[in-house]
View 1 (cartoon, helix red, strand yellow):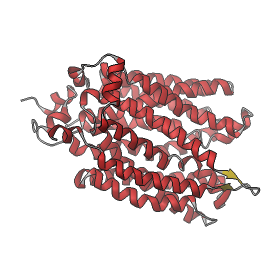
View 2 (cartoon, helix red, strand yellow):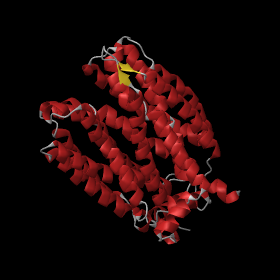
View 3 (cartoon, rainbow, N blue to C red):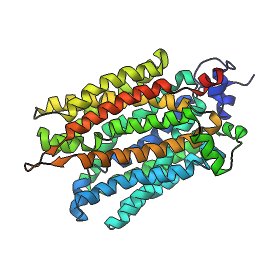
View 4 (cartoon, one colour):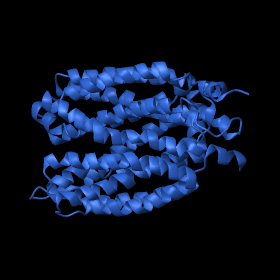
Length: 425
């Protein structure tokens, strides 16, 4: 009988564990692999998040308008979505370790180009390139989680990987802003370049070959591959779930800082506290939620979190002028439950596809996710306006739309089935 390490090297641990071929225990180096995946996810998320607080510098130095800055942010997601779609046709034909290393290398080059950009058009092109690599990189990370982690522990592993968001908010943003204040806006991107090279080296050294999915490769024709992925009702439920999750979150998230300053009365210097305390809280709660999802059922935990999350969504989008501490409390609750519901949802989505299709499916899923996030932001921006006093208007309407989208997500998770459940139906 093969030992745990041999199975992990073959990239086949999750399926063999689920069949009872080996005991239900974590392989010795599983945590080192998850640490690398957290690192990869961290640089991808920090690269996206750092753009928000650097906005005033970009607008001043490049003499751009708010819509131009908005395009600078959204081009990342649209590029990630477009490239994720085309990457899905080839991503399952290669060792996942090789794909991840190539993407990390390309991402490091893209962030270096961001740091060196001399003008707005060049920075725009560099951000598009960063999105092209970053979006696919996120899909590969979750594909690897699905390949090496058995379904009964996938919630915990997903929560661990998603703690990268918390690390980016608590550690990444303060470091990036400190470097920007110490030097200029280019410094955070130089930092991300160096970090990307270090993570690439760690992946090269520590990740085992992950090619078990290649043994089951059958589909190479792009049209047939599209039909295999998109003519499956379960896959369509998963795509619908990620779309509604994005509308339930990213219709609100990009505008929280603006609303807190314009309507609630916070100073711009107070904004880092929103990210810090929210990120600090989710660093712990994401993993707790993952463990609860594994022990009590991912659909059940998602449903509970989704219902609870409606309250902080409506609270944040209807908040009046309050002291800073109350605003921090509201946004922290928002981050805990809105990001927390993504943990069991992502675990369900990862499990909804057969291993042989997981890379392609997750790449398509990442593409759908990025494009949905972009359209959610555009939709919310088109609804909102600005009063004569400079306050945002109709943000409450956006909050109601996000709450309704959350209820739709509960319905969709009830229809979603894991590959294991479908095999016994």
